[in-house]
Length: 384
Image (cartoon, rainbow, N blue to C red; front, side, top):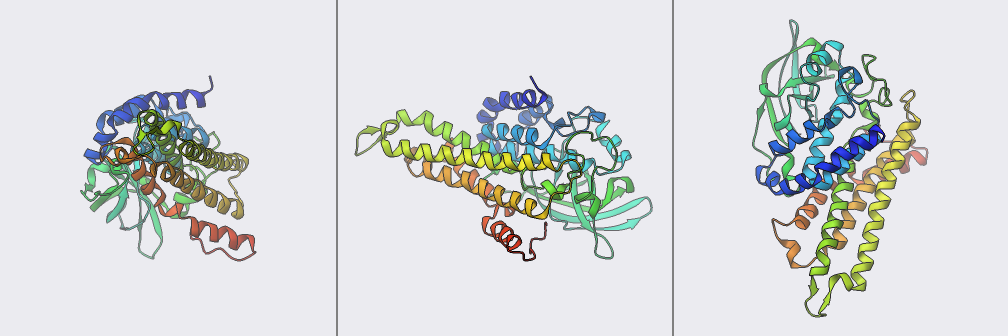
């Protein structure tokens, strides 16, 4: 058994428990403590972590397949795990002192992140004084540190690793879908960050690992190459859609069309919808696999051509929206039982809407960007 297969198998073994606790995650509006403990115990947080710190130094394909499996159990857990696991990539850009401090204390440390650099930082002796408010800190309740950006005097941006205990976690996450992610707001008030836990924006997003600990295929692939685009959150959409199909198929033999008086599983129209839905999910998964192939191709120097990066973003947005449409197609014939607020199908349907609403999955923008590049025009995309 390869290490890839072992890690994916560990994630798959957690699915029954995650499925059982998914309603609790929604009730708590965060990932339950028991789930967090299981993810840690399975060593999944080490998927991308360097072997220097007890990690497995795997590629993004392994990362994505682990996230996909966790999302089959609970989309919110898969989403948060994507954030927790991916921060090994960010941490590797920090100085050795920061990596030693964090990973030696806890090889299974969970680090969260928030994308918009909405904080402010001022230089002080020995480091930085940080204050600000950040939104959408998925999985923050389980983390020891948060990775966040802040503007500094002069207008540039730096990345910071902030101890979660020094942040105020607000109760702002009251939403329709992905309720269990706890993607709430956090606030820092005059928090001191030592110099070794801060890096300039270019290193934070664009440059390869700061220290030669990452020996695997992620070493030269910076956050801007892989960010949310292919490896981070998109696999959660695949796992959520696969689980919806499983739930639909399991219930179909027990459902009868009221007026036709025929079992849903025997209805030709239902069978056709099921086939088209499954095909779309397969297509979505294949599109992401091509993205991982591209990352493997350019792993040597990390220089992914701009058209390829744009195509990866285009394909990822399309894949997520395929999953969204696939679930909608079956939900339309799932009957009144699927409307139950505590049922799995309704939760999966809401989670699919929440995933597809993520800005990086907006099809129109990503399609336009790729089209402009293909036509020889300058792209307007800030992430390219």
